[in-house]
Image (cartoon, rainbow, N blue to C red; front, top):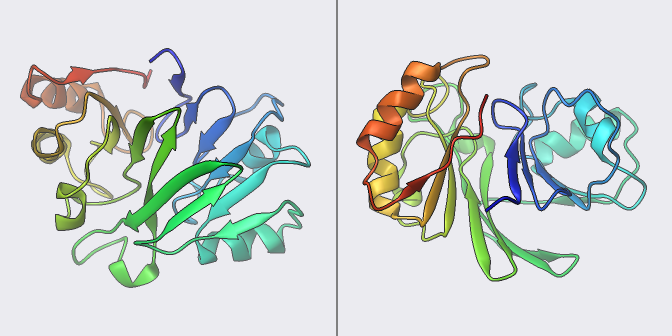
Length: 205
């Protein structure tokens, strides 16, 4: 799984050209095939980073709230607007969405924020987005799980570890910490509580 990287926080890249929630990317790469946006908060929809990864052919997949902001900022790329609990195919890449939300605070279910499960070369990658350990997530089956562990706006490290043990991916990558919320101590709690049969890959610096 050397095809995975995390710039910081929840800024994920798969296969070198598929970006999810690009954030604090300060180099002009302009190599994105697809950019996935989970929701419109500044640490997930970062206009500077988006401009640094997209080119004229890049397709942006996002929620309606994100699409509105992109259009207001004169982003002219093709935009595919998604909703929770739907399946899609873009540039021969199949993916599905699920709701990403907190129970009673910050990210409300009614806002329509999403996580994604993306299938590439027969491998499924699930990006949870900003969410608690919801009942919907507990039903996910995936090969690679990107799970938030920082607390406050997402599940905390122990909750994330327990969720990972329910989902049982082949590999888990903790994200959404050591930047705005969460710390390397949360990373330690997460690693200590994940089932030893599940490979943990640390990509957040």
